[in-house]
Image (tube, rainbow, N blue to C red; front, side, top):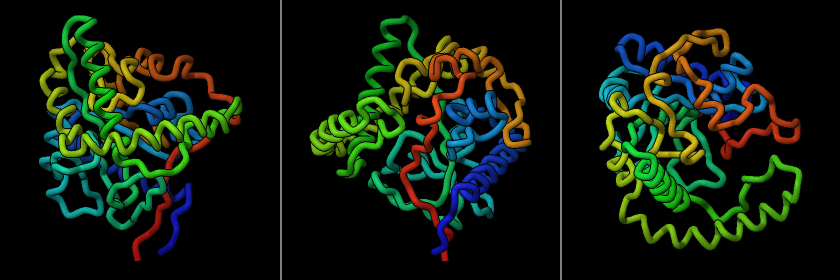
Length: 280
């Protein structure tokens, strides 16, 4: 198989994004750039130069409708999630290019093609204490579910940091190796389904606070005011206009702090953990 380099990877992911965006526009489905993709859109008008992945979000009703329609076409792209496979490895969806394949180094999951992630947005409970408890609980359950898919290899979490890097990697890896067998005890519970059902209790369009509570990578920081966020605004990413949250300042500030300032040069590294190939 022919290996796919970083420039090709970005092009393939961008083409997937274009296909999803066009499909959503044709079918009146809401979507927004999010995470590092939104940050790249605001700060660089495209990919973050040292990054190579794409993430988008959809309100839960649109996320569900997208799944009902997207795979009905004859296409090189397919969506996979808990809605297409009850034993899917995560709470979010991936849209893959079926002409390619990824081989993961640190994750136990079936190999798909090069893909971009789609995260569902849900509402949150009223009341600050209840809302925080809801998010923290989902965060813990999701991390246990993710940990159960990890391999016994050294953590790469601190490789873009200079201070005490080796010691931090060692400590995190020891904790990881101890925790992985513990996480296996929860596999029969299908925690991804549990977290999803918890999140779906709260309607995204009527909640004051919303966010990706089913995969809160940044924890409670991802909980934001709903109405200003769901209003969309067209912004340029890699020369093409895409939907973004109108008021993205609250979201990006929560996640990245001073998001307009690029990180120090030693910290500018990709975190993807796979090799990609064209299928024969």
